[in-house]
Image: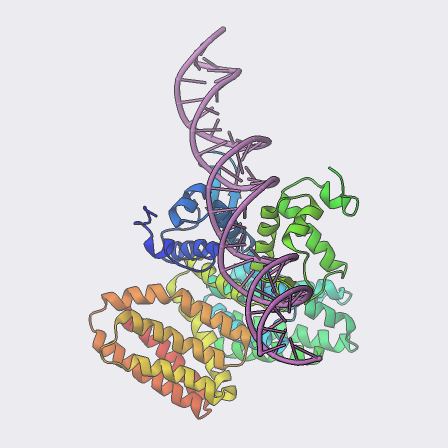
Amino acid sequence: MDADSLQPSFAERPGRAFEVVLAWVDEQILSGDLAVGDQLPAERELARLLNVSRAAVREAVRTLQAQGVVRSSVGAGAAGGTTINALPSDALTRLLRLHVALANFPHEDVIEVRVALERLSVRLAAQNATPEQLDVSQKAIDVMADPDIEREAFNDADTAFHVALAAAAGNRLAMDTTAAIRESMRLPILDRFRHVHAWDDIVEDLRRGHEAIQAAVTRGDAEEAERLVETHIRSAWHALS
Amino acid sequence: MDADSLQPSFAERPGRAFEVVLAWVDEQILSGDLAVGDQLPAERELARLLNVSRAAVREAVRTLQAQGVVRSSVGAGAAGGTTINALPSDALTRLLRLHVALANFPHEDVIEVRVALERLSVRLAAQNATPEQLDVSQKAIDVMADPDIEREAFNDADTAFHVALAAAAGNRLAMDTTAAIRESMRLPILDRFRHVHAWDDIVEDLRRGHEAIQAAVTRGDAEEAERLVETHIRSAWHALS
DNA sequence: CGGTGTCAATGGTCTGACCACTTCTTCTTT
DNA sequence: AAAGAAGAAGTGGTCAGACCATTGACACCG
């Protein structure tokens, strides 16, 4: 009944109790008061601060944990407690993959977004890529050049190629989202790889596409790289459908 | 003590209690005993079945909810209870928003990705938007037309305009990512709104940009809409920097 | 000086209770 | 007999308070 003077807007808020906690954490993160590596208040303290039970706080923490936002460990001192996670892009990738796998998004929708992001990636890569970064994508091309390569290994190298180009873009957010979406389509694409008939023709098209993209990026031709990557993604998906 | 004869492998398992529940649900889903639309046992029953407390069951349910796997609603009968879910989206938006905020990406990087996604959104919107969807974005424009509008309200309506266009694209993934990125920049943009000097000039530019985009989308001119939205975003950010 | 044990703080768990809401059943009234 | 009202039962949502295991800091004793 008293206190609350520090956080009245949250303590008075209606709605589910654990959502009050989530909203509070969201606000703290978005406003910059909580950053990666920082510790959340202890569960008991947070419960008192927001006028909810500790059980409600714990349910919110579980939600944040499931999303990879925080990590909890027991014990006193700096090592214990709940801390904001570096949110390795794995969390994004995991969640995107889960959603796509559950057919929540039509594959065509995913393709559209993927085209938009990869066009951005290769454009930035053509402008910013270092020779070392281009070596990484070239290595993926070399792997795929093996005429006896298994379809799964080819798919992995294919994924690695696109992720490597995204990494070469020098834009971390573009890389993370591009990689997450390509990664989320790894299994659906592999499934099609396995059931397609004209495998030899398709894989040859893919190889040519990759090499053309790599060449355009290497010589810094952003526009051509954008055009090539869009054609590459769309025609590959069409051939597999 | 007793019982457990039905699920000994789970009831006897060590490790965190809520993970026992998660493992049980995983097993039921993977084995096909639980499918989309099915109901989980009631929390009290599940707690008794797995020999854990109801609080542990609830923490597991929160985890599943955060992952979008289940949906809960109160009440007796078929309408109440926790059911296996098909399609959530909040989880993705929330995670992406936090991801952008936490990773502390350079704002320029975020702008690049935002341009790529919003170009996609307005292109799809120009091709697919219904009059009802265009009404929503028009309403945001009307709100911003108020000459006495507060800067925060203007920013909210601005966000709403871009999100509405993304929604009109008819591509759920594009909408979620576009909305998440625009929302992740809500606070930084608001901060600039508050400290900018030539507010009147800037806001007039923004209004003209919105109206031009809305007009292009309405008449189905995808290419012009793409061009306009890119110019709009880049020039607005430049004016605020 | 160095080990050693106490102590405090943390997350993890449990119990048992109450609430708000929804549905189904049963009984009363027309 | 039909319609409606009252209540019983079951659901998730929340709370308070307790205990446990783990961890780190600090005072104490050798």
